[in-house]
Image (tube, rainbow, N blue to C red; front, side, top):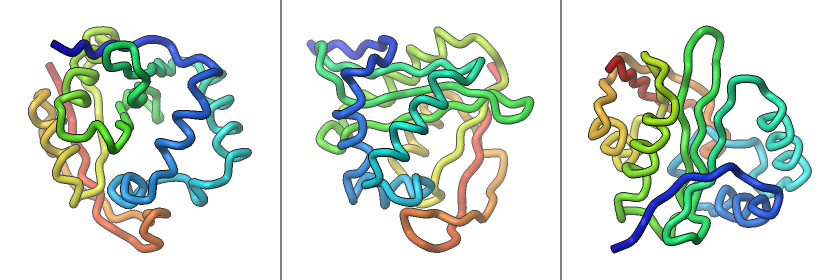
Amino acid sequence: MTEVALRPIVDSDLDALFEQMRDPESVRMAGFTAKDPDDRAAFDAHMAKIKAWPGVVNRAITLDGRLVGSIASFLMGDDTEFTYWIDRAFWGQGIASRALALLLDEVPVRPVLARVAGDNAGSLRVLQKAGFVVTGTEVGFANARNAEIEETILRLDG
């Protein structure tokens, strides 16, 4: 049996997280990403900003001790939002679902929101399985696709 766990992100995780977040297929699927996923300086600056941002809970996702992604909650205005990223080699194994459940236990604030590219069926499934419900959509510019796409907004009340 494999164990999914969360732990604080440490500096030694940054190389692996950078590589995960620049995988072309993962970037395309996420849609709403950094302007240039290959810009390491921008990635490092973003991670430093997250580390210093009050109210952020940023965790590494591990599978049997191996780093396989990240998950976070953060404040966007008055709303708490959740986001996650799983190494593509580990998609479809239930890791995102388990990590989301763990972070929902750690961050008891409700309601919480999540946003996902409208055609990202895997992430929509993960969020809905956790009890998130679709509350609407917006159209926004997706750097990864260099186009405006639909973004689905989800909310978890309980």
